[in-house]
Length: 178
Image (cartoon, rainbow, N blue to C red; front, side, top):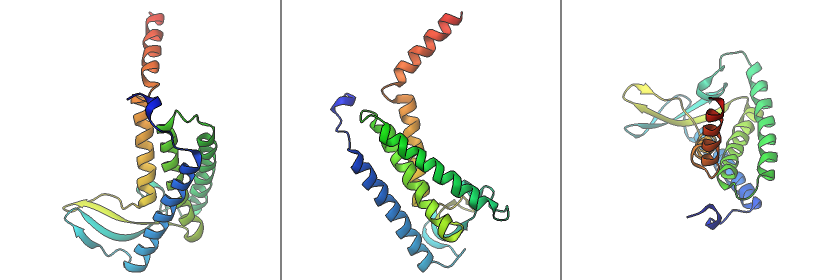
């Protein structure tokens, strides 16, 4: 199936997708906040708990113990990156649908977590995977969207329509350098 046979989503569909993901993220965080007690895991299955946690840092609680300046730092970074990615999304040709979808997910996740930082000073996390007594850092729907978007962007980099052109250009550059 060639890239041209895939129906390209209109820009408005991508912006509705962003809004839906943000809405789902905020709704699930509100549910977690209302229904869970902070730090008390609720068993879901042998490898998954719902555990309400507040993340004052970035991914994996990076810089969470820095006294508050990181809130403003991450708010500014999230806002700037989200705006830049919206501009990138709007300017991308429809044919680059994988990158457009990637940006859609990343923007939705960044804005979802930005809303938390602005309104509460921390990000609400509640999805908590573990294996026996080893726990993966808790996360939320916004984090899943960011991770999924980054994954799709990597797939496009390595397997997208331009990937073979990049490989050929790299090979030609190596040959020219010899």
